Image 1: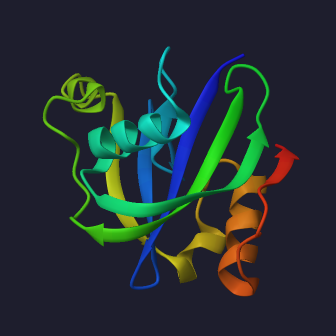
Image 2 (image 1 turned 120 degrees about the vertical axis):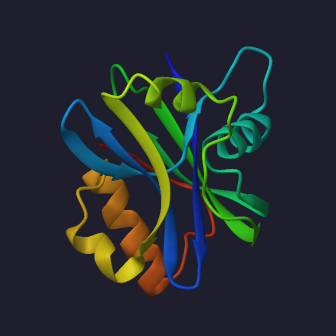
Length: 147
C-alpha cells in the first residue's frame, strides 16, 4: 500500500498549496508525496516539501490520516509551523522536470484561506477537515478518515 505525506503550512491566513494543471484538469492540493523505502514519515515530509516548495518549517505534528484508496494509499497529513521562504519548485525536482514538458504542470503557491471553500481542492474530505481545523482548532490526536 502506498504511503504519502502532506503538509499543512499556513502563513498570514494563506495555505501553502500545490496548484496542478494535470492535462487541463486544474486543482489545488497540499504539497507532499511518496515515502521512499527506508525513510521515516518526517524525513519524507521534509524532502517532499523542500523539493516542491522550498519553504522552511518546523514543529510538524500529525493531524490527519486519510485512507485515500487505490492508487493514492494512506496520506499522512502534518500541521507544520511556517519558518521562511516563498513557494517555488526546487530546480532539481521531478516536478520542475515535468513542468518543462509543458502539459502536466506544478505550481506551488499561497492560497488565501478565505478562497479555500470554493477552491477545487483534492480531496474534498481533507478540505473539510482543514477548514474545520482553521475555524475550530486542530485535533490533539490524529484523526483518521476515508476519502
